[in-house]
Image (cartoon, rainbow, N blue to C red; front, top):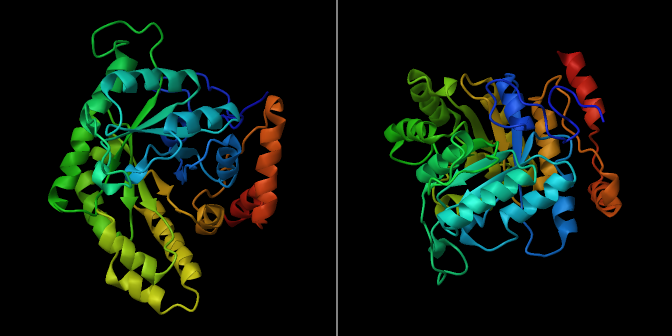
Length: 363
């Protein structure tokens, strides 16, 4: 099976000097390309086809798919299980680990298991408090936090040792990430917080939703002044708002998300608010793409995942680069059928190959 420089077949890539993983995401970023990742909405189900169908929505448009780990302190299918399913059919997942739910023994075991399944990317999170979810009586763990989790996995990878000092016979070859939020106070400390995460081991970061470009630019000025953009790949979060009502609810109820009045007013004045929310996201993505020091975007379209392909295509951020496509594994014909079925149901008007040709002509 052939593959190009970025490994479009989903098979493990040969090691390159200076790379810590065999994955596509690190390969794309180190090549200086603008990377695009997205977030898979985890099912409340034990049906694997629900994962395959949700992954198919991003087929051909992203360089990595985040498998969330109990986001919002709510229970869904686990991130390590989603990654196990995605890797078996050629997708490139980013496994999130939330310290809220796992102690250091479980985390280190999950890292080894994930790496054995072909997971090349791990995003380290402290995690929302249990009071934020629908089971506030759950007992939180928080044996580690984001910083100590980064250091733990970095030690496992680079030194081949567990926290106990015991030797790991085959260390996990993973690309380490963390989360950032330039849009929450205290703003003056956000770049310093990023510096600490880089020191702990973060090689890439994904940000909270960006709806305020001037605020992001002020943050990036601090980042560039400290040279942090040269030490870490920064992916900025963007996403479509379904309506002005939804935007107001998010702003009031979801900590850390900043939505300016101007965005809400624009939604309120639109005839089709969902379409306007998509257009705002496309504009944000285009501006993020042109910002110095930004290496990519993380597209979060909660319950609007079908819009991701349109957003990425219309924003033009892939330019002439060939979008990633999944190679069908003949051992999983039922999976392939499920993937094709969901594509037919979505009735997508965008063909990846046509998009590449159109983008190449524009360039």
